[in-house]
Each structure stands twice: as structure tokens, then as C-alpha cells.
Image (cartoon, rainbow, N blue to C red; front, side, top):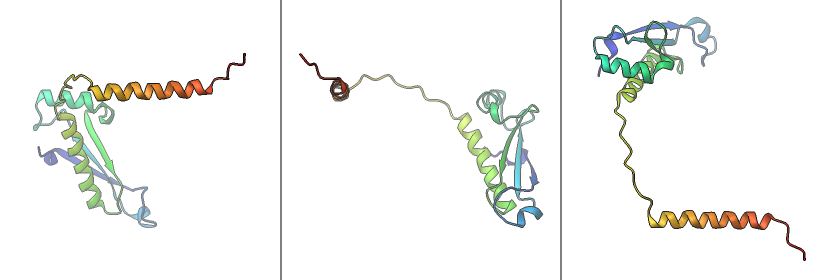
Length: 131
């Protein structure tokens, strides 16, 4: 799914590495994807994204991603696009249901053995009985 036509970008001064470059060049990139106005996504996908990514969505319904890792605005823009694609892809990926399985005989034995070892440790911490 190509979201790039619907992504808007703004650039600002970065707080990252770069020395005096930080004070002169706008390298921080903020990518905004408007979920409400999106023509690419259907209503079910929009609802899923709103539910799963609610911490990254502002009041206007925009999914916001910022990147200021490198000194290059172009590279930060590419990284912001990649992150946006990853977030949307993971949020839209269907959740597979867990199949219930029974514990194996070996796992039961391991669990009982570890319980026995733990009880021995605790038993050894007690004061000895003096009679």
C-alpha cells in the first residue's frame, strides 16, 4: 500500500547531531498522514488504525511521525516514510488466534523439577531444628 501521495511533510530545526549545522539547517522532518481524508484506506482500515495507533494520532485525525536521526533532511524524510509504512502495516496486519495446546510430558517434568529445586532452596534457608 503506497501512502506517499497522501503524506505531507514539514521540516524544522533538529536537536540531533551536527554542531553548528543544527542551528542553520532544518533537518528534522515531521510526516503527517491524514486518516480521515485518506482515499487509499477503507472505513474498516481507518477504524482499526484509529484504535491501534491512538497515541500517535492528533485531534485532527492525523497520524504523525517525526524523524531527526541524521544530519540529512532527505534521509530523515525517507526514514519517516519507512516508519509510517511500518506502523500502518503492523496495525493492519490481522491478529492470528492462539491455538490452545496441552503441555508436553517433558515440560511437566521440568516444571515439577524446578519446583522441587525451589522448595529445597527455601527449606535450606530455614533454621535447623534443635531438639
